[in-house]
Image 1 (cartoon, rainbow, N blue to C red):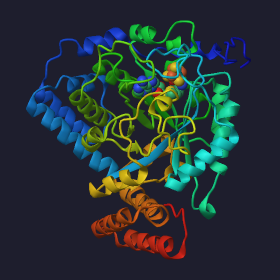
Image 2: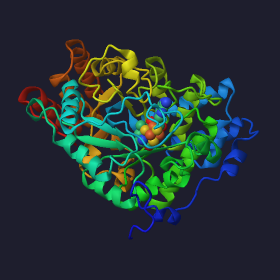
Image 3: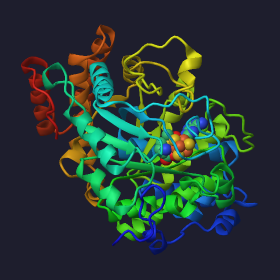
Length: 484
Ligand code: SAM
Ligand code: SF4
């Protein structure tokens, strides 16, 4: 394909027309308008979810209509149960690393938008990037998501270079390393995705922000790259065509009716599943947060109780898609919502560019470089200790991606026994690495007690023996990265 329709960023726009608009706004509205709770029908849908079948958009709409105390209680219980069955008690940990906040777009909710003159703009130099990665490794991180504004500076080649530099940066005699780099950047063209794929990325995330076209136009001014709804809606189709089968979708909750966005996300997931045989690897559901210079009206703000509902419903609708809850949310909300189906959270998050190396006291200065405010400001060790005390296994596992269990293969493996064979044991191995190399004494004590409890639960003697042998190699022989 020659670049016959280049836009001002040099992106090949010609392929946009090849993909279709799979979001029918009127149909989605018709599914949520005036719908009343039908608990008997919902109970049938709960059963379907528990058998780990993805729900249709219509079934998801039924769940969105639940408002009674009894119905909500059953909804949350079902989500808890499904989460335990599919994901066990692991929570995967990562940190975002902001690479640069130059942006040519003008999303009215974002602290990086181009018209905001008070934002201090910066792109990490190679040296600064390496120092940031070293600081994150020294905290114990193994998984990062690199985040970029949208700007001609941030070409696919630039993104690929930052990914390779991140992987190449090691500390602590190789014990400190980043094993998985995900990306949250502007949508690329197919050629661009190929370039970043070759750099060894994990998930490529693009959030649609809102699936509702009228609202989309309101928050993303026409004439900007992001103002093109279809270019963004088909971002993951192009990613797949570019060889990326590990895709992350999301919506920014608070721009429009949360029920519409849930159905938009489910429609998107089903579209990818149907067209490419691979659903999204993750779904994110950030709620809009205060940002530098943010003074827009948000009539659709999502309350805490609505937020709990939407997470539980997403869990039931897409049983095999990881759900990511970021540190935008407070500790209290994270504590509550996690049990309804979240599988990944970030920890020790710093959003200002270069923020992992410097302790900034001047909050105003900090906010001027941040995209929005963080709700959970605890460091990684505090978050890990908190998870352990709640009987979750904090996991830095990166195994599936590295041994080729992604995309279609991941779906194949996401069958009974998968968690026990791979995830739980990999999670425990990466936790032991953390406890040996980076943890506080208190976390180490409680962490090993959790590992003991998990070993005691194991019924397969062969699996148990192999795990004990690997744990011994980590603790007593200094070996690392012993993945299943
Ligand atoms: N610039 C790229 C883009 O817009 O896709 C990628 C990075 S952008 C920094 C990542 C995400 O942050 C956006 O997709 C949006 O959902 C979210 N975001 C922007 N402003 C926010 C705010 N005020 N509160 C919470 N999340 C926000
Ligand atoms: Fe730029 Fe992304 Fe912020 Fe929009 S959300 S202004 S594209 S950084």
